[in-house]
Figure 1 (tube, rainbow, N blue to C red):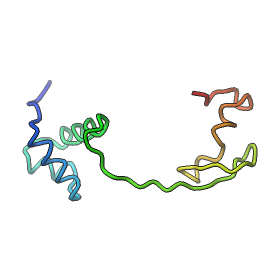
Figure 2: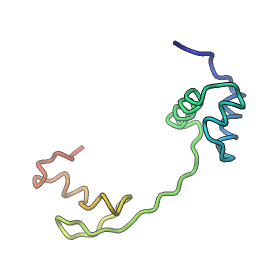
Figure 3: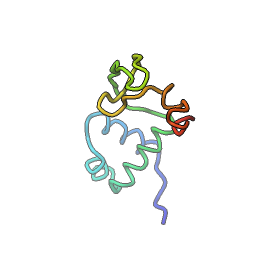
Length: 97
């Protein structure tokens, strides 16, 4: 089942509301769309690169548990092994891309 297409005015309005701090439920109520439709459209537009909300990610310096070399990690609690070690034969190359 497919609903009505989004107009450019609706997309721009939803973007402005999202940037002002409103959530999908509030935006949907204002423009008469379901929150799922709003959430899906905003996610789809972000993936297309038409507009992106600014996010700041902290980067932490960690010491690899395998080779003891320093590396940069986005999640210091979970990422404890550097990419070089993950893609090496020690891990059987299971993380190699």
